[in-house]
Image: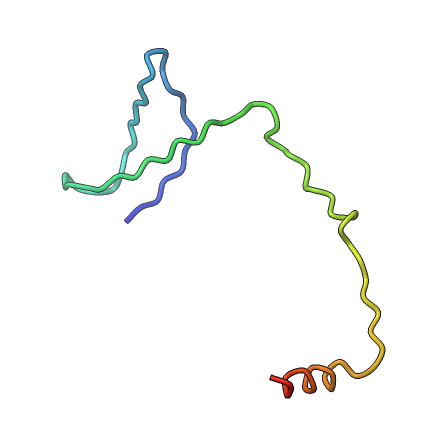
Length: 74
């Protein structure tokens, strides 16, 4: 099995022509094609800034003991 990833263009009439040399003999193969339009803009999208969602929990006491107590309540 081979996995190929390439970027190519669809012609004016809407046809996608693929000429891909392989190392396979003349055999029947299964082909899966995923079309994902490539945008010339926004190829480098900045990572989302999660700073407004960041917080900090301050815990007083023994976390393991509290966990055991909660588990024993079940």
